[in-house]
Length: 337
Image (cartoon, rainbow, N blue to C red):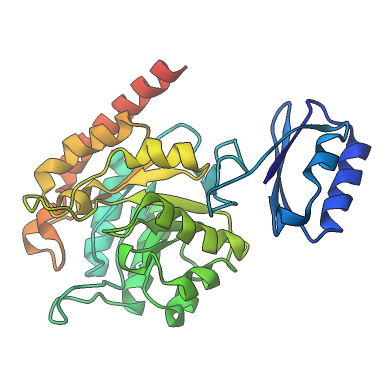
């Protein structure tokens, strides 16, 4: 349930209503706009006297929320959530660029790529230290050593970093990581999500390859309900009957999720396509539909990459894509103004 307060509501009346609700074991999510305040009620609202609330002078209206996700719901929080990571902003209408290799391989490799993507305009460095692979014989990542190499490259370039966590036992290794990524396979690892809710680090939450929008938002709800509301949703393609591409990029996820939730939404065209040549057009499409950012895989030598070389851009190709993104994002902002 949400309670919509009248414009410029009286502070004393607001305090009285707030106490009245908390005395009835309601948890409140307060969203204050420039003119109007919305109270999101979390708890058993069936016992509340809706007629009595409606008659209060401060109250403009009441709405029941049918969706099971509450804190992630745009009805609870009409204004877009903006995530700040050092000097980088995600969700403010601009388009953040996250770039780097699928896997951290050597100190020289990650530093070379980090320097290049920064010069091309990337805002955040990505790199995998723990790699969830279908085959046990595939490269599984350098683990703790990989995180150290990633952080060394971050210090050298000044870029914040994002990397994927696989298990709760790894959490201490992520103390200096700026954004913790939850991969598609862990989207419904609720024990992991709950523990990440106790951190205050931004969480980049990837949609599972066969999950609905509501399931993705319910996973975000697990993190938010534990106390961490700094969540970035990521569409990375879903599994369909089409097998020409690695996955099928669902570009409709961006406007759909933005209509349902206030959380920022980014797109990973590399994992969606699995083919480097498709990353550029899919990146343009992502910006056009309103994505808050893109996460793109870049390698200094894709043909010899230890993981996902076929979907990784070369450093010169990434520079071209980054230029496209900036131009398309500028045009988008112009059209929306």
